[in-house]
Image (cartoon, rainbow, N blue to C red; front, side):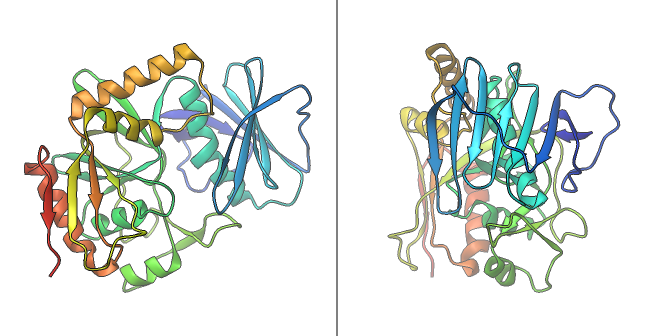
Length: 323
Protein backbone atom coordinates (compact mmCIF):
# COMPACT_ATOMS: atom_id res chain seq x y z
CA UNK A 1 0.00 0.00 0.00
CA UNK A 2 1.24 3.48 -0.89
CA UNK A 3 0.13 7.04 -0.16
CA UNK A 4 -0.10 9.12 -3.35
CA UNK A 5 -1.66 12.63 -3.12
CA UNK A 6 -3.22 11.48 0.15
CA UNK A 7 -4.95 8.51 -1.51
CA UNK A 8 -4.08 4.90 -0.63
CA UNK A 9 -2.99 2.85 -3.65
CA UNK A 10 -2.60 -0.93 -3.52
CA UNK A 11 -0.14 -2.24 -6.12
CA UNK A 12 1.13 -5.62 -7.27
CA UNK A 13 4.57 -4.08 -7.96
CA UNK A 14 6.83 -2.14 -5.60
CA UNK A 15 7.11 1.66 -5.80
CA UNK A 16 10.49 2.53 -4.24
CA UNK A 17 9.83 6.24 -4.91
CA UNK A 18 7.12 6.26 -2.22
CA UNK A 19 7.07 5.17 1.41
CA UNK A 20 4.67 2.30 1.98
CA UNK A 21 1.84 2.68 4.49
CA UNK A 22 -0.13 0.22 6.58
CA UNK A 23 -3.76 0.53 5.54
CA UNK A 24 -6.52 -2.06 5.19
CA UNK A 25 -8.75 -0.33 2.65
CA UNK A 26 -7.18 1.14 -0.51
CA UNK A 27 -8.78 3.95 -2.47
CA UNK A 28 -7.29 2.67 -5.75
CA UNK A 29 -5.88 -0.57 -7.13
CA UNK A 30 -2.94 -0.67 -9.56
CA UNK A 31 -2.01 -3.95 -11.29
CA UNK A 32 0.74 -4.46 -13.85
CA UNK A 33 0.65 -7.33 -16.36
CA UNK A 34 3.73 -7.95 -18.49
CA UNK A 35 3.54 -9.43 -21.99
CA UNK A 36 -0.20 -8.82 -22.18
CA UNK A 37 -2.28 -6.89 -24.69
CA UNK A 38 -5.55 -5.12 -24.00
CA UNK A 39 -8.58 -5.59 -26.25
CA UNK A 40 -9.46 -2.10 -27.50
CA UNK A 41 -12.21 -3.21 -29.91
CA UNK A 42 -15.18 -0.82 -30.06
CA UNK A 43 -13.34 1.95 -28.24
CA UNK A 44 -13.43 5.47 -29.67
CA UNK A 45 -10.00 7.15 -29.84
CA UNK A 46 -10.74 10.81 -29.18
CA UNK A 47 -7.58 12.49 -27.85
CA UNK A 48 -3.84 12.45 -28.61
CA UNK A 49 -0.84 14.15 -26.99
CA UNK A 50 2.71 14.08 -28.28
CA UNK A 51 6.04 15.57 -27.22
CA UNK A 52 9.64 14.82 -28.13
CA UNK A 53 9.80 11.79 -25.81
CA UNK A 54 6.50 9.94 -26.04
CA UNK A 55 3.02 9.98 -27.48
CA UNK A 56 -0.21 8.83 -25.86
CA UNK A 57 -3.77 8.39 -27.08
CA UNK A 58 -6.99 8.17 -25.06
CA UNK A 59 -9.97 5.99 -25.98
CA UNK A 60 -13.41 5.75 -24.41
CA UNK A 61 -16.26 3.26 -24.44
CA UNK A 62 -19.15 4.36 -22.24
CA UNK A 63 -17.30 5.35 -19.03
CA UNK A 64 -14.29 3.08 -19.50
CA UNK A 65 -11.01 4.59 -20.68
CA UNK A 66 -7.79 3.34 -22.20
CA UNK A 67 -4.64 5.47 -22.10
CA UNK A 68 -2.16 4.10 -24.65
CA UNK A 69 1.45 5.24 -24.50
CA UNK A 70 2.62 4.31 -27.97
CA UNK A 71 5.22 1.49 -27.95
CA UNK A 72 5.27 1.53 -24.14
CA UNK A 73 2.10 0.40 -22.34
CA UNK A 74 -1.69 0.51 -22.16
CA UNK A 75 -3.53 1.63 -19.01
CA UNK A 76 -7.14 0.48 -18.63
CA UNK A 77 -9.31 2.49 -16.23
CA UNK A 78 -12.22 0.71 -14.57
CA UNK A 79 -15.79 2.00 -14.79
CA UNK A 80 -15.68 3.64 -11.35
CA UNK A 81 -12.04 4.77 -11.81
CA UNK A 82 -10.99 2.86 -8.70
CA UNK A 83 -8.70 0.43 -10.54
CA UNK A 84 -5.96 0.88 -13.14
CA UNK A 85 -4.65 -2.15 -15.04
CA UNK A 86 -1.43 -1.71 -16.99
CA UNK A 87 -0.57 -3.99 -19.92
CA UNK A 88 2.80 -4.05 -21.64
CA UNK A 89 3.57 -6.13 -24.73
CA UNK A 90 7.33 -5.68 -24.62
CA UNK A 91 10.04 -5.72 -21.96
CA UNK A 92 9.47 -2.20 -20.65
CA UNK A 93 11.50 -1.52 -17.47
CA UNK A 94 9.45 -1.19 -14.32
CA UNK A 95 10.81 2.29 -13.57
CA UNK A 96 9.18 3.46 -16.81
CA UNK A 97 5.86 1.86 -15.83
CA UNK A 98 6.02 3.49 -12.40
CA UNK A 99 6.87 6.87 -13.91
CA UNK A 100 3.97 6.71 -16.38
CA UNK A 101 1.52 5.77 -13.64
CA UNK A 102 2.69 8.27 -11.00
CA UNK A 103 3.38 11.26 -13.25
CA UNK A 104 0.82 10.83 -16.02
CA UNK A 105 -1.97 8.29 -15.51
CA UNK A 106 -2.88 8.73 -11.84
CA UNK A 107 -3.11 12.54 -12.12
CA UNK A 108 -5.45 12.05 -15.10
CA UNK A 109 -7.57 9.60 -13.08
CA UNK A 110 -7.92 12.05 -10.20
CA UNK A 111 -8.77 14.82 -12.65
CA UNK A 112 -11.54 12.69 -14.13
CA UNK A 113 -12.86 12.22 -10.59
CA UNK A 114 -13.18 15.99 -10.23
CA UNK A 115 -9.85 16.90 -8.65
CA UNK A 116 -7.75 19.86 -9.85
CA UNK A 117 -4.20 18.73 -10.62
CA UNK A 118 -1.67 20.98 -12.30
CA UNK A 119 1.39 20.15 -14.36
CA UNK A 120 3.47 22.17 -11.93
CA UNK A 121 6.36 22.20 -9.47
CA UNK A 122 6.28 23.92 -6.09
CA UNK A 123 8.51 24.96 -3.19
CA UNK A 124 7.68 25.85 0.41
CA UNK A 125 8.56 29.27 1.85
CA UNK A 126 7.75 30.79 5.28
CA UNK A 127 4.77 32.62 3.76
CA UNK A 128 3.39 29.62 1.84
CA UNK A 129 4.02 27.54 -1.25
CA UNK A 130 5.12 29.04 -4.55
CA UNK A 131 3.94 27.21 -7.68
CA UNK A 132 5.71 27.15 -11.04
CA UNK A 133 3.70 26.28 -14.16
CA UNK A 134 5.32 25.29 -17.43
CA UNK A 135 5.66 22.74 -20.18
CA UNK A 136 8.18 19.92 -19.88
CA UNK A 137 11.70 21.24 -20.32
CA UNK A 138 10.96 24.85 -19.33
CA UNK A 139 12.94 24.64 -16.10
CA UNK A 140 10.40 24.00 -13.32
CA UNK A 141 12.50 21.29 -11.65
CA UNK A 142 15.74 23.25 -12.06
CA UNK A 143 14.18 26.29 -10.40
CA UNK A 144 12.90 24.12 -7.54
CA UNK A 145 16.39 22.68 -7.10
CA UNK A 146 17.76 26.25 -6.89
CA UNK A 147 15.28 27.02 -4.10
CA UNK A 148 16.22 23.74 -2.43
CA UNK A 149 19.86 24.74 -2.38
CA UNK A 150 18.85 27.75 -0.29
CA UNK A 151 17.19 25.49 2.31
CA UNK A 152 13.62 25.83 1.02
CA UNK A 153 11.81 22.48 0.92
CA UNK A 154 10.54 21.17 -2.42
CA UNK A 155 6.82 20.41 -2.25
CA UNK A 156 6.43 18.60 -5.56
CA UNK A 157 7.97 18.12 -8.98
CA UNK A 158 5.66 18.22 -12.01
CA UNK A 159 2.32 17.24 -10.39
CA UNK A 160 0.41 19.23 -7.76
CA UNK A 161 -3.08 18.57 -6.40
CA UNK A 162 -4.99 21.71 -5.37
CA UNK A 163 -7.70 21.63 -2.74
CA UNK A 164 -9.84 24.43 -1.36
CA UNK A 165 -10.19 24.30 2.44
CA UNK A 166 -12.26 27.15 3.79
CA UNK A 167 -10.60 30.35 2.61
CA UNK A 168 -7.25 28.62 2.02
CA UNK A 169 -6.01 27.00 -1.17
CA UNK A 170 -3.80 24.02 -0.31
CA UNK A 171 -1.15 22.31 -2.43
CA UNK A 172 -0.81 18.54 -1.98
CA UNK A 173 2.31 16.74 -3.32
CA UNK A 174 2.43 13.30 -4.90
CA UNK A 175 5.85 11.97 -3.85
CA UNK A 176 9.28 13.39 -2.96
CA UNK A 177 11.79 13.76 -5.77
CA UNK A 178 13.18 15.96 -8.54
CA UNK A 179 13.78 14.98 -12.15
CA UNK A 180 16.86 16.71 -13.52
CA UNK A 181 19.03 16.59 -16.63
CA UNK A 182 22.63 15.38 -16.06
CA UNK A 183 24.13 18.74 -17.07
CA UNK A 184 21.82 20.49 -14.60
CA UNK A 185 22.94 18.17 -11.81
CA UNK A 186 26.58 18.82 -12.69
CA UNK A 187 26.03 22.58 -12.75
CA UNK A 188 24.06 22.81 -9.51
CA UNK A 189 25.78 20.38 -7.14
CA UNK A 190 29.44 20.29 -6.12
CA UNK A 191 29.10 16.66 -5.02
CA UNK A 192 27.21 14.16 -7.14
CA UNK A 193 23.92 13.35 -5.33
CA UNK A 194 22.31 9.93 -5.34
CA UNK A 195 20.29 9.55 -8.54
CA UNK A 196 17.93 6.95 -9.99
CA UNK A 197 16.92 6.44 -13.61
CA UNK A 198 13.51 7.99 -14.27
CA UNK A 199 12.51 6.08 -17.42
CA UNK A 200 14.39 4.16 -20.08
CA UNK A 201 13.41 6.59 -22.84
CA UNK A 202 14.78 9.69 -21.08
CA UNK A 203 18.21 10.88 -19.93
CA UNK A 204 16.64 12.65 -16.96
CA UNK A 205 17.58 11.31 -13.53
CA UNK A 206 15.46 11.27 -10.39
CA UNK A 207 16.92 12.88 -7.29
CA UNK A 208 15.08 11.27 -4.40
CA UNK A 209 14.62 12.11 -0.74
CA UNK A 210 17.02 9.44 0.55
CA UNK A 211 20.44 11.00 1.27
CA UNK A 212 19.41 14.06 -0.77
CA UNK A 213 21.08 17.47 -0.33
CA UNK A 214 17.58 18.95 -0.81
CA UNK A 215 14.71 18.73 1.66
CA UNK A 216 11.24 17.63 0.59
CA UNK A 217 7.88 18.41 2.16
CA UNK A 218 5.13 15.79 2.25
CA UNK A 219 2.48 17.91 4.00
CA UNK A 220 -0.38 20.03 2.65
CA UNK A 221 0.78 23.63 2.36
CA UNK A 222 -1.24 26.84 1.74
CA UNK A 223 -0.49 28.39 -1.65
CA UNK A 224 0.98 31.89 -1.73
CA UNK A 225 1.58 32.59 -5.42
CA UNK A 226 1.65 31.02 -8.89
CA UNK A 227 4.22 31.87 -11.57
CA UNK A 228 4.11 30.67 -15.17
CA UNK A 229 7.55 30.23 -16.74
CA UNK A 230 7.87 32.06 -20.03
CA UNK A 231 9.45 30.40 -23.05
CA UNK A 232 13.15 31.17 -23.46
CA UNK A 233 13.53 30.41 -27.18
CA UNK A 234 13.98 34.09 -28.14
CA UNK A 235 15.30 35.41 -24.84
CA UNK A 236 18.87 36.81 -24.94
CA UNK A 237 21.28 35.80 -22.18
CA UNK A 238 21.51 39.41 -20.97
CA UNK A 239 17.73 39.84 -20.69
CA UNK A 240 16.46 41.06 -17.29
CA UNK A 241 14.51 38.93 -14.84
CA UNK A 242 10.95 40.15 -15.29
CA UNK A 243 7.67 39.36 -13.53
CA UNK A 244 4.40 40.55 -15.07
CA UNK A 245 0.82 39.98 -13.85
CA UNK A 246 -1.70 38.27 -16.10
CA UNK A 247 -5.28 39.45 -16.32
CA UNK A 248 -8.12 37.32 -14.87
CA UNK A 249 -8.96 35.75 -18.24
CA UNK A 250 -5.29 35.06 -19.03
CA UNK A 251 -4.79 33.58 -15.55
CA UNK A 252 -7.75 31.25 -16.04
CA UNK A 253 -6.47 30.14 -19.45
CA UNK A 254 -3.00 29.54 -18.00
CA UNK A 255 -4.38 27.27 -15.28
CA UNK A 256 -6.55 25.39 -17.78
CA UNK A 257 -3.60 24.90 -20.10
CA UNK A 258 -1.52 23.26 -17.36
CA UNK A 259 -4.12 21.05 -15.73
CA UNK A 260 -4.12 17.29 -16.14
CA UNK A 261 -7.12 15.82 -17.94
CA UNK A 262 -8.07 12.80 -20.01
CA UNK A 263 -9.00 14.90 -23.02
CA UNK A 264 -12.37 16.23 -24.06
CA UNK A 265 -14.70 16.94 -21.12
CA UNK A 266 -18.48 16.90 -21.26
CA UNK A 267 -20.15 20.29 -20.86
CA UNK A 268 -21.16 19.86 -17.20
CA UNK A 269 -17.71 18.64 -16.20
CA UNK A 270 -16.05 21.43 -18.16
CA UNK A 271 -18.23 24.04 -16.45
CA UNK A 272 -17.47 22.69 -12.98
CA UNK A 273 -13.77 22.53 -13.75
CA UNK A 274 -13.63 26.14 -14.91
CA UNK A 275 -15.61 27.23 -11.86
CA UNK A 276 -12.94 25.57 -9.72
CA UNK A 277 -10.13 27.26 -11.65
CA UNK A 278 -11.91 30.62 -11.39
CA UNK A 279 -12.08 30.26 -7.61
CA UNK A 280 -8.30 29.68 -7.57
CA UNK A 281 -7.71 32.91 -9.48
CA UNK A 282 -10.05 34.81 -7.15
CA UNK A 283 -8.40 33.47 -4.00
CA UNK A 284 -4.83 34.16 -5.14
CA UNK A 285 -5.22 37.20 -7.35
CA UNK A 286 -3.26 37.35 -10.58
CA UNK A 287 -1.02 34.61 -11.84
CA UNK A 288 2.32 36.08 -12.93
CA UNK A 289 4.55 35.38 -15.92
CA UNK A 290 8.20 34.89 -14.97
CA UNK A 291 10.83 35.74 -17.57
CA UNK A 292 14.50 34.93 -17.01
CA UNK A 293 17.44 33.63 -19.08
CA UNK A 294 18.08 29.92 -18.50
CA UNK A 295 21.57 30.36 -17.09
CA UNK A 296 22.41 28.28 -14.00
CA UNK A 297 24.63 31.03 -12.60
CA UNK A 298 21.65 33.41 -12.52
CA UNK A 299 19.40 31.13 -10.46
CA UNK A 300 20.26 32.70 -7.05
CA UNK A 301 19.15 36.07 -8.47
CA UNK A 302 15.94 34.49 -9.83
CA UNK A 303 15.19 32.91 -6.44
CA UNK A 304 15.72 36.26 -4.66
CA UNK A 305 13.51 38.09 -7.18
CA UNK A 306 10.65 35.60 -6.86
CA UNK A 307 10.84 35.63 -3.06
CA UNK A 308 10.78 39.42 -2.92
CA UNK A 309 7.88 39.60 -5.34
CA UNK A 310 5.83 36.91 -3.60
CA UNK A 311 6.25 38.69 -0.25
CA UNK A 312 5.78 42.32 -1.21
CA UNK A 313 5.03 43.01 -4.85
CA UNK A 314 2.42 40.55 -6.08
CA UNK A 315 0.13 43.20 -7.54
CA UNK A 316 2.77 44.86 -9.71
CA UNK A 317 5.18 44.01 -12.48
CA UNK A 318 8.86 44.11 -11.51
CA UNK A 319 12.13 43.94 -13.35
CA UNK A 320 15.50 42.90 -11.99
CA UNK A 321 18.27 43.97 -14.33
CA UNK A 322 21.15 41.51 -14.59
CA UNK A 323 24.53 43.17 -14.22
